[in-house]
Structure formats: C-alpha cells, structure tokens
Image (cartoon, rainbow, N blue to C red; front, top):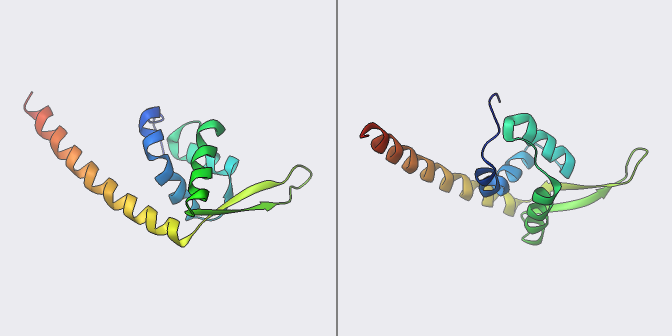
Length: 114
C-alpha cells in the first residue's frame, strides 16, 4: 500500500482487528506480524504495542500460540487465529463498516456545507 502510515491513534484503535485479519493468512510470530502490517503501509509497529494486544487476544481465546524452534537462534512464539477469533474479526469488521459508512456520510455532508 502506498502513502504514509496512518495516525498512531487510528492504528491503536484498529490494531486488534488488523492483527486478527493478518492471522487469517496464516500463523505468524510477532515480528512477522509487524513486518506484514508494515508492508501494507501501517508503519512501524513496536513490540510494546503489538505484544500486549497478542497477549490479550490469547487470554481471550481469539488466538492460540505455540513455541517453534528457532533456526540457529532462540525459539519463537507463533500465533494462530482461533474460530472464536474469526467470529470476533467478523463482528469487528461489520461494526467497522457501519462506522466508516456513517463517518464518511457525515464528513461528506459537513465538508460540502462549509
């Protein structure tokens, strides 16, 4: 995705949904998740922001994790989306679509009336 990274407030507000969506593509460790999102234009996602989200999602059974042996280095914790996580993502996406449609309509109206 081209362009600059989104405002950090927007990213924090949508990071859970974004992480779950990325995990629908396949299991990933935290660094690979951050790289994937960075490649899509979300900017640099620091571990201090990402790992608390992953830990919360794991506690709430939206993701599962397993340790994977490292190749010549330490092992990595690999995350996978669960069925509960897929349902959660679907609900969040539907809510996001309603919100952005409402916001877009409001902004168009108010910006055109200026």
